[in-house]
Image (cartoon, rainbow, N blue to C red; front, top):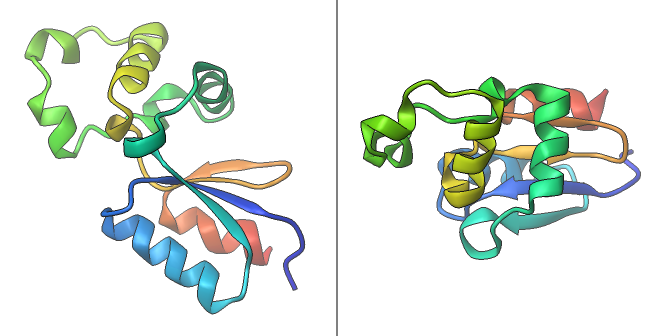
Length: 117
């Protein structure tokens, strides 16, 4: 049985986030949900994620938010520019981001490994 609390980050209307929440609920795993769209994300947490996962793994270049950015903002990205973009537009962060007491991972595929070992 899972012990501890999972922190799940994403947006409410994201299908992938809904699947992650459903998985946690079906397995009676407690979690706290943080909606990027409503609550944003703080620079310290985002920077820690970038340190652990890399900005390339966190930046969602497939979504509508990315396509809506002016081309100049999408070019010549580096760590600092990517962090600034994600802070200004949290929906650019790939979802879900999952935090446990000692790990952080991104994407639905990472969930079973984190919570079931």
